[in-house]
Length: 86
Image 1 (cartoon, rainbow, N blue to C red):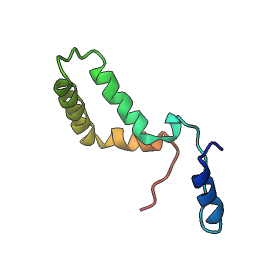
Image 2: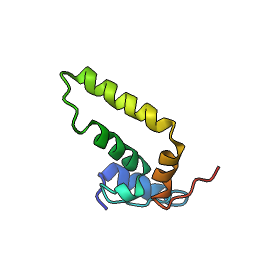
Image 3: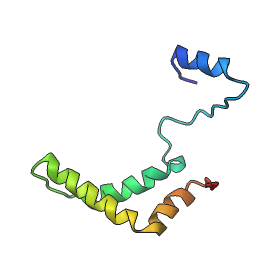
Image 4: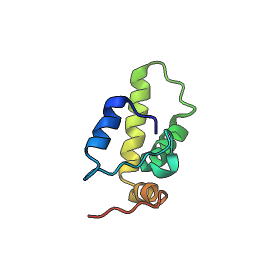
């Protein structure tokens, strides 16, 4: 486990109620938002923006589109195998 000393100490001091699962530093299969960001990257991959404002607008526009496609949002979570308890 690669953690800074204060964090290791905190975990050890609270082991009676704290359970820590160390995930790989990059684990898109366990991270639902990675699937959504991949949709954004595909959409703006060929964008020839003149400035950062254009990139920002394109990303916001794509995220807004995804927000209304609940099957994409649900699919991102389902793809991880994780379950939401409500």
